Image (cartoon, rainbow, N blue to C red; front, side):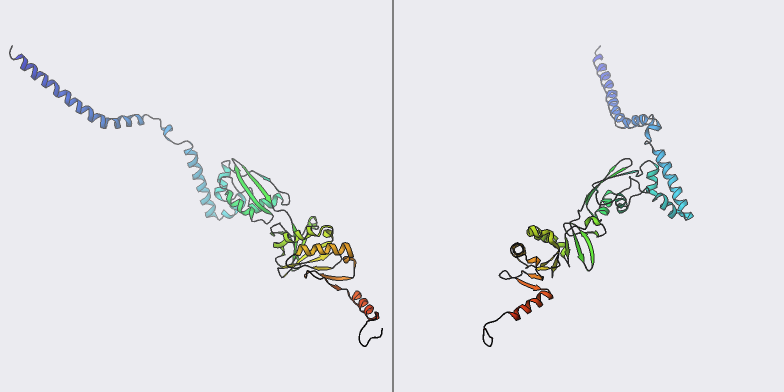
Length: 316
């Protein structure tokens, strides 16, 4: 009976050790067993769920595309293929439904649609997927008539182009050639359209960049505006106006608008433009110098000869 407590203690001690061992074994299994359970679960995922969608289609298209490209290259038919269907990557994109089928253009008045497409390099051989919209925009903005362009894609098959044109502002004559220019002086095109025949005309080197100054002189001319045919920029400094009767009006470098106002006053008070005058020089603010026609100069000389003069050696 006295051994019972000792046996009980031994029994309790022996029972504790397996629980401690069991506990450590549980931790061991927990660390490494979770990986094993994960492997068992992943093994149960169906194969079709672990393969990306359309992988087979992509591989098949890639395979056939590669075979086709290599065959065309080896057979010497690649150039003909490109001419007909475009570059291989464009042709492949078109084959899967990403070709360029529609181009919407807005903002055009002077430029024609076919000119826009040609400038942008767009045709049936280009795909929308591989089209660089920045490149298209830069191509279009190199066209003199086009001031700015915006280009965007609308998948799967449409390209939208919005243009801002330069408006014809004046005509510029240089070395015998006539150009249509914009307000900033940019040359738009050769003058080949009768629609622009009534635009203001500037003549001479750098006159295109000064056409706004010339237009300001036209406004200052008021009632004489319609009688001014052209403005010639002389030495890049001052203007000479060509009137509808062939008369030249030379303006000063500074104060040109004031000189034009003097011309308006002369015409109103003396009808100067109706006289036999080849040129009027208004470059000096305190005087007016005129150059007469040959007939007018001869008539004036005869009149001066007949006019009695006072002074030494002259009969009165």
